[in-house]
Length: 109
Image 1 (tube, rainbow, N blue to C red):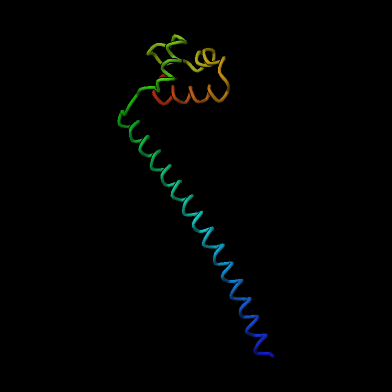
Image 2 (image 1 turned 180 degrees about the horizontal axis):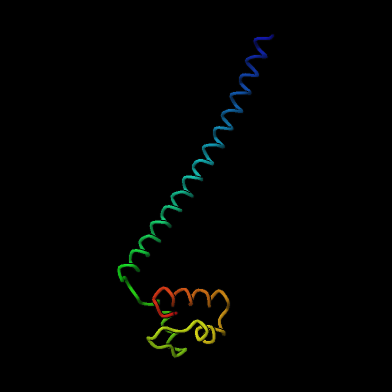
C-alpha cells in the first residue's frame, strides 16, 4: 500500500509541476511579446530622433496643415499662447496632439 500511495503522490506532484511549468511558459511568452513591442517602440523613436537631428522631414500631417490653414498660421513659429488661443475650440486631447505635431516640425516656440 505504501508503494501505491507513493506512486499516487508522485503522480500528483508531476501533474502540479506540469501545470506550473505551463503557466511559467505562458508568462514567458507574454513577456517576450511585450519586450518585442518595447524594442520596436525604442527603435522607432531612435529612427525619428535621428531624422530630426539630421534635418529629416519637417512637414505636418495633412489634417494639421488644414487646421493651420483654417486658423491662419503662417510659416513663422507660433508662440505657445497664440497656439492655445487658436486651438481653444478643440478638445484637450486634440490640442495636445496638434501642439505635439507643431513642436515636432518646429512651428511652435
